[in-house]
Length: 487
Image (cartoon, rainbow, N blue to C red; front, side, top):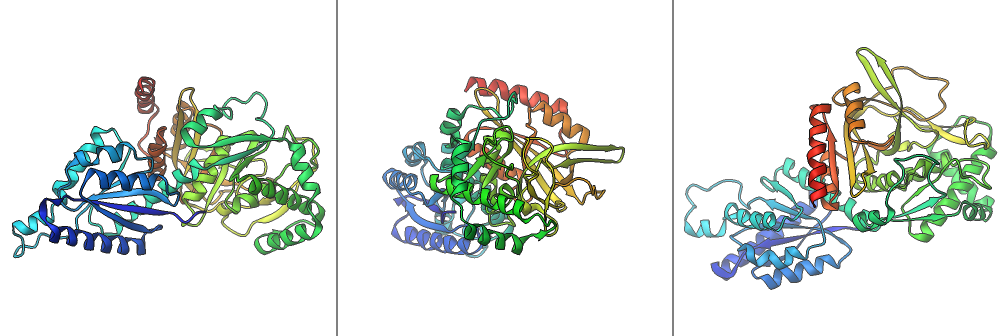
């Protein structure tokens, strides 16, 4: 992860004289320093903007500084909005309009016209808000007192979404082979993905991976085996199979790092020259922050990496996921999420176990994999689908639970959850929205953050909540379909 920061641009004008401007700058610096102490990323005061030139120059500078993940604007005094037009029209970074004021209270004895001229954010932010609306600029608006923990939490949450956008714009995905044959939802327009989301999605032959695997040495494998022992329990005596997964992991990581890739996909139908489908290898790479997508699903692979980056300052609990089967007993309706092998151990409730079992598909040796139960807690599942002409991000609120049965003969990682608003309605809504069978499950990243990310990336967002119904969602999707076709 790069060291990101956010630029604080404060609006004013020369009308009020140098003393007022000096006070505005002093307060703005104090606010930036104070916020930097509590927010996940630093807030850097840049300028008290008094002219169109200052605003335009600062925003141009922000556009070309990679460490700047976004701008935060606030108008301490009245800042005429025509000054902002050229700058905001050229903005290429996420924007948060922070509608706040320096003082919490109206001081009954102190308030006079001098006080009013200095402290008129209520006036200035409305002028500033108009030009954002007039320009139809995608922006996050956060209102409230800047020292309040709840307001700071919202600002920090948006920061993580903006960092997700920065990661997205530099995303490279390494595909080993193509998509699973005849599957529709894992397909997509890779050119449009690069135009809209910044993703460079390219294919490397599996034979090149095998060649890289042949170059891995025993000392390399020994070192990774020590990492496995430090993090996981060995529940197998088949050490050679585990070592083969280590060989795969080292080779995949070397290729990704060499090419600057943060995510990868593979396909059990294309394992030419490989003895095992990467299981433990994929899981441990995800635990390190790489994105993964099974069956050639490059969209969920990139989305996994982005969501992991957004949740980096949480507990890192995000994972490639798939709804595998349902429990439909009345009053006990749950979805069981799993995959053939590849669920990230960051979501484990307890220390994962390394086990070796036959896979049943792929016509290869039984692979080593991590087996564990997911932890309980509020979470979301998210998926990205290509609707032909636009991308749609579908997010559903869920509550993960401790699995209600041990399932001793299921040798894979698993997470059980209650879908919102309930299992049957949630299924109908997900299917109505065209949600894929692959998703990203996250305990760290919220639906609001993903809504912010979708707004920044200019893609469609669909949220399935406790109040969703198939009928309401169908109407919402019809309206959105018309809107997106008119754009």
